[in-house]
Length: 219
Image (cartoon, rainbow, N blue to C red; front, side, top):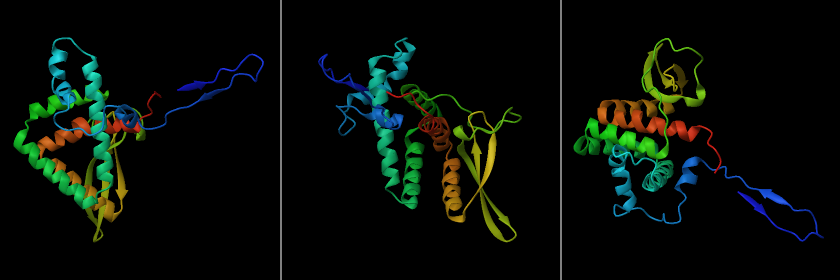
């Protein structure tokens, strides 16, 4: 944003102050004067759920898509902030509860459709979610995401190794401390135990994290 103060001709030269918004994209996108507290009566939920129908009718990039994208960004930001205020065990219990709800009310088809809708609304790009063999180039740390966590016993001691995967499908193993490794190991075991939860993680969360970690144009 550029602020300029006009001065009469006989006064000092015009001074221009350039202000940039360095907040993450998700915080900028979530900023909406109508956004106070979202509940299920918010009409933007309908905008999100009807996105596949609009897309099928060729009505892409409509104002309703923008409204849905703002709501998704705001809810994601709120979820991230809430997880930061909980303990690791509380976050793990929340993940277990989510796994149970997905099993009761969702299917692979509905998860895939929702993943596509959220990805389009917030502008998530495509990425590999499974390791690929013989990918040219070096591992891209800027697009790396946790893919798995290995728990090994070496010389009578338990060791942990986080398996990272980049956008192209290259992998890299990183040794972790016992405390951090055990927490990630439990989390990944829970994710892999439920195919629906794993679909959410690899189909939605990894793409969103790519966007969170990548440089975004200033608004």
